[in-house]
Amino acid sequence: MEKIYFALVDTPGLFASIIRRVTKSNYIHVVVALDQELQRAYSVGRRNPFIPLSAGFERENIYQIVQAFPTARYRIVSLECTKEQKAQIEQQLEECYQQRFHYHYCIVGLLFILLQKPFYQKNHYTCSSFSAKLLEENGMKLFEKHFSLVTPRDFYELPQTHVVYEGALQEFIGAVQAGNAY
Image 1: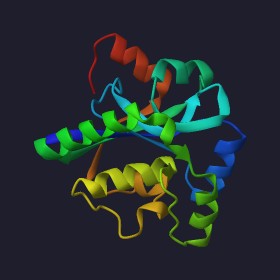
Image 2 (image 1 turned 135 degrees about the vertical axis):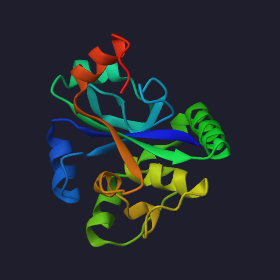
Image 3 (image 1 turned 180 degrees about the vertical axis):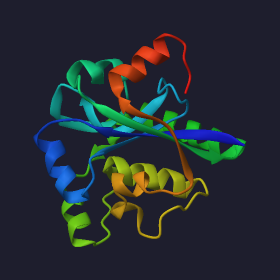
C-alpha cells in the first residue's frame, strides 16, 4: 500500500474566520500532498499566501506560508491507497498544475455549503471539494455527500486517516529540515 497525505491548516485572518464559522472547525484549509514532508503539496487556495484575493489551484509552499502566517497550525494525516491510485492522483495533480490558471476558488460554494445544496461550476472548487472530488475520481469515495459539500471538518473527522503530525507549522518545518520524519 502507498499513502497520500492531507494537511489541515489553521491560519489567522478575516476570510479564515468566516470559513471557521461556516465549517465549525479550526482547520479551515485542506492540502493534498504526495509526501509527508509536504514538498509535493497542492490545493485550491491563495496563489500567494500574502494576497488573499488571488486564489486558484497551486503548489503549496510551506516556507512561504510560515512567513505569511507564523502562528499557522497544521494537522497532517495519511490515507492509504493503492500504488495505481497514487500514480493516478500524482498525474492528475500535475495536469491540474499545468492548467492551474483554469482553476478558481468557488467563493459562492461556501453559501451552498451553508444551505447544504450541492453546487458545481466547472473548474471552481473550495480546497476541500477539490480534494474530495480528486479522491472520488480515483476510486476513493470517502464521504456520504456530494463533493461540493465536503468541508475541512469532514477531512478532520475522516476515520480512514492516521495523524502524522499536529502542531505549529514552524516546528514541523524545523523537524523536516533536521531530517526528523514523523
